[in-house]
Image 1: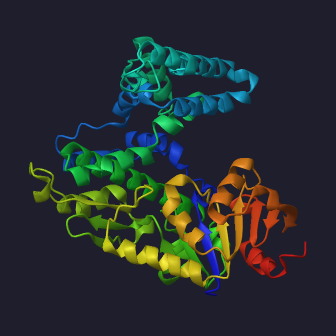
Image 2 (image 1 turned 135 degrees about the vertical axis):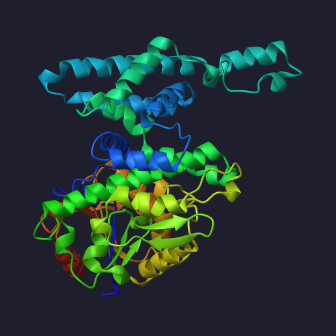
Length: 448
């Protein structure tokens, strides 16, 4: 079945019965895990990394301090997320709604300051009139106030810190979740700390080792929990995939590999079942990942292969999980990834029909988007709940070159969909779609 290719994104692991969190809520889940059932993991990592000062709670203060340096459009995006979070709250959540209104009001005041500081045409014209010979030297900015150098008042900081801390608590708080989705994104944190391996900043290296193994441990524990909950061994979505299918996943979980086998799967962003020795760039397997105890693995394998005591990072030893940070420019954790990405491109080139499920084509995955963009003459079915939204159609135009006006509304296997040329956008969740039927339906794509 080399002419058929399945591509999986994060939405697949959100399927009911699997219920993995999305990246923007991961940090709260990891924090709760380390404070509870994963306490032994936290202890093992801190024993392995002497002098480590990092805590996820300490992130909050740093995130708040950086608020004033955010661009205006970023601050507006945060306001929009909070507005959406409180828009449909039930009456018994009135206090949470008020909390959201407070956050929105504070951010709007900050945005107003930034907007009013912009150098308008009338002011620029006056500067040029008063200083006609050297106006270009005087006008070295498009603003009369450097908003990035402002410091927030203690009132603003305290409100934000208390709000974000609610996001790390046991009970879900909609406003805290909306704010933390951007300010406390664990993938953003991984990107920031990973640079320590390149600029040889020891605190960042230790922080990355801690954060990445903490994330790995949580995902492994969550994976075991999902497996244990399905005594039949048949997982939602994965358990009904047709055998012999080639598949590329952008997820870390081992569910796909367990269902289709190593030869038929590519883990584009790495996976939970491997780790990397950073000095040799060797990619090493983790045996029996579905039964792995994270704390034991860290103590028995990771710790003996890690040494951060030397002041010169080149004299240290580091091993990290094979989880590729979601950078647009992918860091080469191991030469093996060059081969994997090349193989992924080859599979896309060979495929006549590609089914994409639960993948949003976001900017952080431009490397993978480029592979799809490089092989445009393929039949492509894309299954995501937001498939028919204007924002998603804009993304599709950037990847496949098909304008929103070219799509016709159709039904595909009972689901609302849009079709243009060889691209079909199907508005459905991963658990609601029959992959086998979808591949078969492509043969009669024009008859709905």
